[in-house]
Length: 212
Picture 1 (cartoon, rainbow, N blue to C red):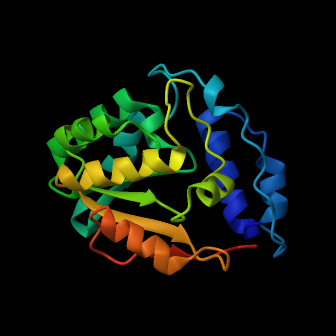
Picture 2: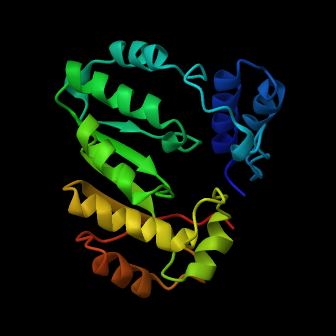
């Protein structure tokens, strides 16, 4: 359950990316209530989404949005959203490369880290400076329970091991790594911090508010 205004914002993003008005009227109602809401299921399963570069937002659309901003007032550029940026790897790397052509700002990627650690070198090569990764828990079973990851059959390790490998590879590649989690009473924060440190993370985990 999330604050109504948060759900409304995320659903408006869905409409913008899909070119629909499916959530328009519901969002108008959400703007008038303080009652927490459950984010509705995505329009499609991740495994069924087309991987072609024609999906929105396009690189040109994102760069147009960036051109309308005074970069002098920014500390960094963050690539994030309701979805997972690494699901469109070619778009992601090209976008970062083109951002670096027009700006010297730090580019930070927010990701679930559920990708092959070999992809880290491509992220570093295109210009990603820092990443924020959701580690969530020190326990593999609890991580799967909280994240409900959907991995391709070609991956033969647990989702938790996959994200841990990604974090370690990112640090080895010289990227600045931030680890995040949800401040739930059932998550052992000390053990999760210890795991992050073992993987090479120096900073304290950024714990986000839990909305039960």
